[in-house]
Image (tube, rainbow, N blue to C red):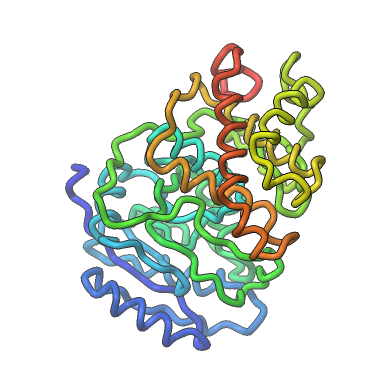
Length: 362
């Protein structure tokens, strides 16, 4: 289809307990004429049944279907930005958000550094707070669900991977997560805000490369384990919740013992971090960001893109939101973001053959 030929139908998924919020969101997005799909399932059964109804509601004359959850905050100029994004990637699943502690968040930061507007989604789940699918893909997903119990983001991931449709996340994100008490049991995860929130309504250039294209192993420090690890993100095998520790896939000369001197030099440049978090834990944080720079297919640009500072400032909250008071996390966002960005720059400019074959598809 021509890229200019995008006709969106829009649905807001909601629950009777949050219907007022959904109606307010619908009023805010009146130009998209969103319909409300209210969850009628039994409590504790997950949101998949309601998601099936939401995706099955794709409009007859639509080319694409947008499903929003009721706890999102759209950016300024949302409808125009959304159409620009879908026109640029009409065949992909387009996610408008990923949370600041996800695996995908690292690739969002890499994209922001490079000045790119797309990152590949590489988590076990599909970020579904705001998601656009081509109309037929939306209907196919709804028809594929035989057991409506469980979580929509896991079911979406399994279906999209099985059908070979990749999911891309916009950089910056076009919605923020208005994080309230989770209705799907995710409250234990702590605050889940945007990795790179939009700021203002200036038009985004979505005609850029995608961070993470071709990558089969992505570095991540889980907000539950706080270790620098590698996680499989290729197309051939299943995605796993647990990864492999950093040294298993770091090349000779760039293993953790080789990096300690560089780490301590960077830590000395950000004295506010000393004593706030143990050095052992900070080293895992720093190493993950260094690894993220290493996996870039080419040396990274010398000067970061305009969104890089914003994106890297969410790295520390994303990892430590369960372990430190938010007052501490907020106070350290600046120095911890610079610390993460410096590690990324070191990795991105390290001398090795790129793209490094151990981390990329043949």
